[in-house]
Length: 152
Image (cartoon, rainbow, N blue to C red; front, side, top):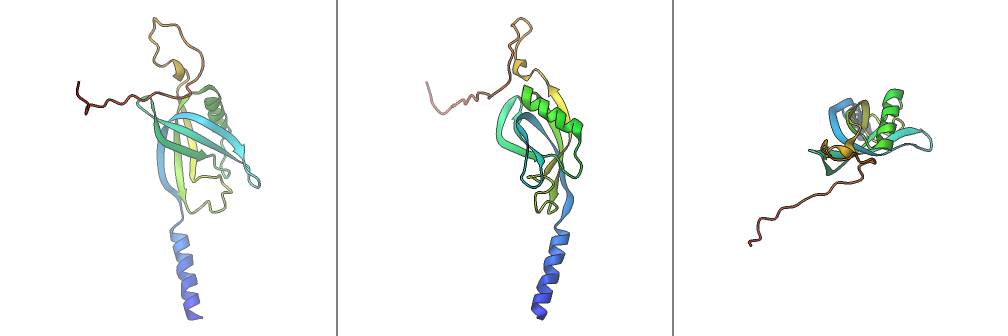
């Protein structure tokens, strides 16, 4: 009986000290490839960002949510437009640890607090002024690998 009580107290202490509303803060830059309202019990806005580095897509995706406890309609509208038109954006987020056990706030622990549009014409970012403007959106980028181990 005494052992169960000690285990219960230690478990409660671990759960309470392991929770952090503001575990980390950060920014990610890229193109929104998915943004939708999902959920059976708790509807939440969920998205996927293809992270870019120096104009190229990274292999590291970034999944995020809009916090159901504090939804910002302007952020939702901007993310929806960015997903629809292929805009390059900077997402400012905070990450929680242990406060979203039932996914009632969103499916991820990364909650977007601010969106900044960096490039609305991202598909035309590399056109010179003398070239005609191309309409459309960025779907993917091409990687070039230079192998210097092979000799001529």
